[in-house]
Image 1 (tube, helix red, strand yellow):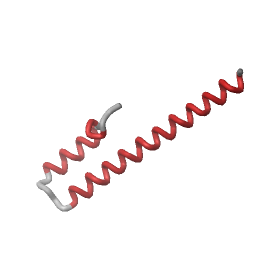
Image 2 (cartoon, helix red, strand yellow; image 1 turned 30 degrees about the vertical axis):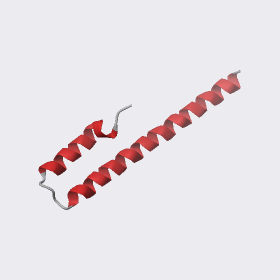
Image 3 (cartoon, rainbow, N blue to C red; image 1 turned 30 degrees about the horizontal axis):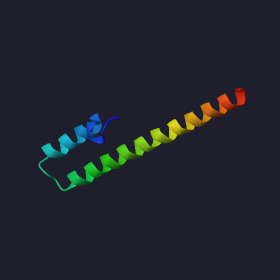
Image 4 (cartoon, rainbow, N blue to C red; image 1 turned 90 degrees about the vertical axis):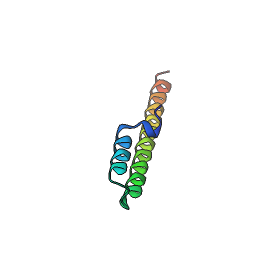
Length: 63
């Protein structure tokens, strides 16, 4: 599994903030990017659990 710092969008935003010369909005933008990445990963986990439960139900009903 990739670390959050290895995500291309995350890296691009961090690079943009560093190039901007430390504007006040920089840390806020980084925080927003981190939060969005965590939310996306949480949605992926929920989707995977849902698919696993549906597959288990299909296998259970077929048996």
